[in-house]
Length: 241
Image (cartoon, rainbow, N blue to C red; front, side):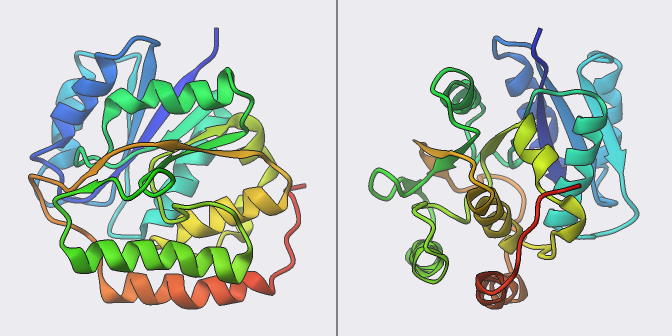
């Protein structure tokens, strides 16, 4: 039986974490969840530990000592998943901006339609973003245009953080070589998978701005992504050994 893991990085998501985990576990398909918490002072990790008593075989937690970056959290989660023989590994936010009900659609794009990696895309079918300020929409949309122009990758939502990877993608990517720690990590992983010859499918989703908690986006994160894309353009990529 195939094994499916949803990785959810957290920092101060006490308002959302229990609800998002229960929403994933309510789906058909026996999804597992790994929460990677970066030392949240609001008790996020404690809430996960409480819920683990109810779901001891499906809910897992990695606690880290501080805010070490989104990219490093996902890399840690990928390694954890590969060591435990998961077949499909998902990225998803804790704040319900990604609808858990779309997880089976991302899975089907890989399992049934033959993609190696599927992306929950805000922009492949118009602009499907709800309750974001116009400036934030423009920044995100233009960032994807910038990535397509500089890197030549035909992905409409390169900064999307709602992703399904088949195991072979993460086994092939050299995770030690991943450099970006913020949201630029999303661009780096998609570009790397593309360069390594994997098929990437975009699945249209509706992205809804968080109702509870605080966004982690900052100017420094955007700057890392901007300059990191230029560096990617000239980097030599090799698969993992």
